[in-house]
Length: 248
Ligand SMILES: Nc1ncnc2c1ncn2[C@@H]1O[C@H](COP(=O)(O)OP(=O)(O)OP(=O)(O)O)[C@@H](O)[C@H]1O
Ligand SMILES: [Mg+2]
Image 1: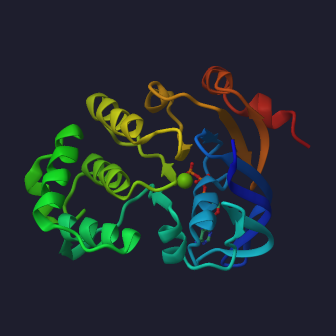
Image 2: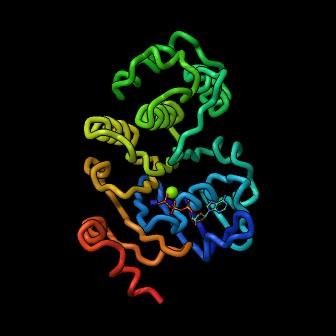
């Protein structure tokens, strides 16, 4: 399998605070990776750095996507290359409907004009799969959506955009049991042998339908342990203390 993403010795700051400290991560095409780690370890920061969020300054190291050094690229250029981030806390965007937003995103990704009715039909089918009321397509993006509805709208975005790398940051947090099942089905529907997933979670349930290739523990801005899916069970049973204790 060929390499999709390589994060090489990345050090990153926000507000002069050192958050990532020599972080290494490699994801091949078709793989599903999980990142776990205590609150404040730097997990969301890693996603932001891969996405190119300008709040974070990379002071050392590089990020490669499909072999190309993208460290200096802006977020929109990275999105066009096929990197997608589902936010831990999705933003509300008044004045832009969910459908218009998705249509513009798709057009920007493909560079092709879209047939409005065909797109609307596709969107309705995807919203049905996610148990989303189709009337939400004409509501302003995430405005007044409940926490769970915002997360579903992020998964809808992923399904519409079909990125090569989808990073999901605690997409399961705040979802009720049924919604976790629906979202997890949506993620499974998205996944194929050509795309890759990087999932941050504190909860094993969202992962149940997925074939996990690697699990990483992020602590103090670095990945301190990588193993197979059995590591999820170990963390859920024993917490992080054991693993962190073996560090340093
Ligand atoms: N823009 C920022 N400005 C200042 N500090 C930041 C910024 N972003 C993150 N941090 C700090 O960096 C550390 C890592 O934050 P991050 O959000 O990456 O943690 P996390 O591992 O995702 O935690 P959680 O599990 O709680 O979501 C925290 O101490 C946080 O306060
Ligand atoms: Mg986080």
